[in-house]
Amino acid sequence: MNIKKTTLENGLDIILIKNRFSESFSFQLWVKAGSRNEETSKTGLSHMLEHMMFKGSKNFGPQKHAQIIQANGGELNAFTSNDKTVFYDNMSSDKLETAVKLEADRFINLSLDEKEFLPEREVVYEERRLRTDNSPYGKAIEMLFALSFIAHPYHWPVIGWSSDIENWSIEDIRDYYKKWYNPQNVFIVLSGNYNDTEAIPLIKKYFGRWRKQDVPKLRISKEPEQEGERLSTINMDVKIPFVFASYIIPEYSSEDSPVFDIIEKILSGGESSRIYKELVYNERLALSAGGGVYSFKDYGLFFTYGLQNKEKNIMILKDKLLNLIENLKNSKIDSIEIEKAKNQLKAEIVEKTEKNFSMGMLVGDSYFYTGELEYYKKLLDRYSMIKESEIKDVLSRYFSRDKRNIVMILAKGDK
Image (cartoon, rainbow, N blue to C red; front, side, top):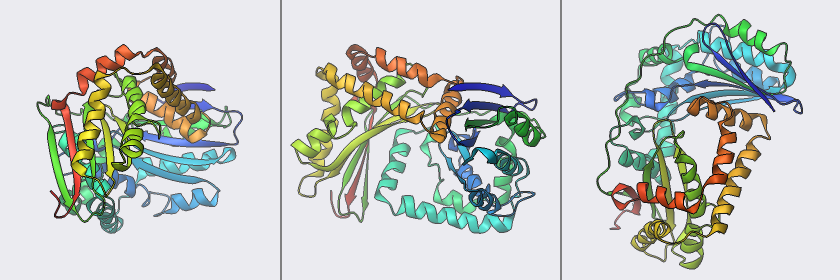
């Protein structure tokens, strides 16, 4: 698969991933702005602006972008994370100009009409109520981040705090759009099959007139060293209590980052993993159990969880979950476990290379977090080199009891 990068005079980077065996493409725009670019009292602006990007631009009215893409047999969407906001259009190979023209219009000429903004703000507020305020899982994840990160912007939720959402103004959104949506702070990924002689000229035709401007210097508080275990208990109307535990880990590009992927697979990579096998099968303390890794630009978060079997005790489940991590630090890790974890991770990367959208995401993440187009290939090699001694070293440095954070969701009345 051929991957190359070019840059327009206005500073817009374009990454081309050619797949001659496909009949479609994924056109993606990566904005280097997420919740970490926000500030106290104005959290959630990145996500709100994502919504407003579908509410009309100079030449296309509200929802017209989506209607045109869908009428041409394509699909589109967007997502906002802690570090970035990504928009994409997936279409057949002969529709590239349609996608480029539509995206350029909203990125350069977004309307940001207050009549569209006010009802959409209510939509986002309702989204928060549904996915966080009234969701035990959403509430737990929000608290896990708030508990784990005290000073860094990863402390606040991507969707924003409720009081901030209520007070957003259209001027807040306009200022945020002007500040971060410029060619110096965005890059394009085109993945799939396209006409080689037309792709760059088309993008240049529509995006070349985007005015170049400096990217504001982002000043972010460094997270202070954690000096003791943190515990938060939330009482909600839940029938089944559950527990989360997390540890702050280094950023995506860290040399240690791939080791955490291995550790996560050993602990929670499927039904044969240590956590699932012990807590669900053997002890029957949990109805479900697992974990994961959040890898970000400045830090990361390693987490595990257990959903209580209602006939068991949540405190015993918590202690067993935490002990499994301690045991991994102190007991021998079988080479079979390590090889299985490596194979799982390699298979996930290979699978992503098979589809235009996921391939675009894979290369986009590589470039966004490391500046390298094919960092994912280095990951494949890096996984192969990891040995038990390195796993043990990482466990001892990052998984101490003083560095863990625990969130428990309990039924009202429970202690």
